[in-house]
Length: 301
Image (cartoon, rainbow, N blue to C red; front, side, top):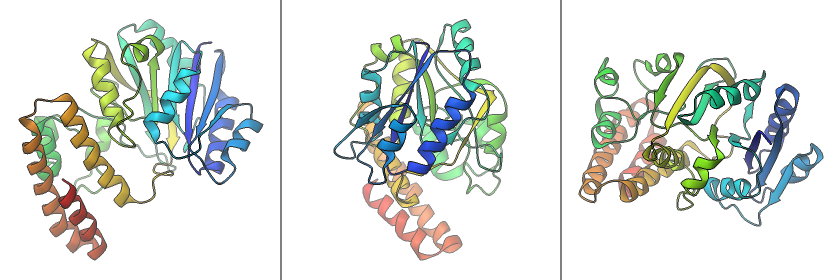
């Protein structure tokens, strides 16, 4: 088996069906299997996936992204493992071409392609590890022109930026620190060495953590915009508020696990400063609801 495609599903039946059909239609010249891990969807996602020939694991609850991915990985057979979001669609033979690229580039531990919105515009799909200077930039000064050129960005692409400069970052092939789990292709042997995804992360920042451990082994993480897929984004996440608060929590977990203990209180201070600034700025620009969301972020930071 060349590649195992693992898709975590949670109440995204129509998107899941479109995703699987696109894989079946366009993937050529490699042997592959599709494994769907369903986190107790109530919309018939599991049965729909079975009808399309996927192997399906049906969970009795929503166990989160990391746990579900590990479940799929444990029963997979591929030399390469693709973790693919259910809200994605493939439009050409991406997998049949990226896998050979991985075979040639033996130092590449994990790769992704370009992610595009429905209108074809580029999305964010990774960046650099969230060191204290990078988190400070992200929380405070990143909207200033040229800051990203001076401080490598944790999140290069930020749609609320006054300058919206991040998209250009994703136009060229490059080695970066981390890539999102929407399309993350990795070698089986490396995933086995790092023991898969860290299940302490429910959703958000678990992809940063996985890439951090892959790079610690001496492997590279690559962004390959020669290939692209459509990613609708956020289909399984309840709200933008949920995404924001989950990312705050995820960064805190990542710091506790990966960096020296003295950095953690500084991180929390930076997150609080960032949240406070956003209460004011986005409260003015977007209204009371946005201010309330960042007030919650301030409390949990």
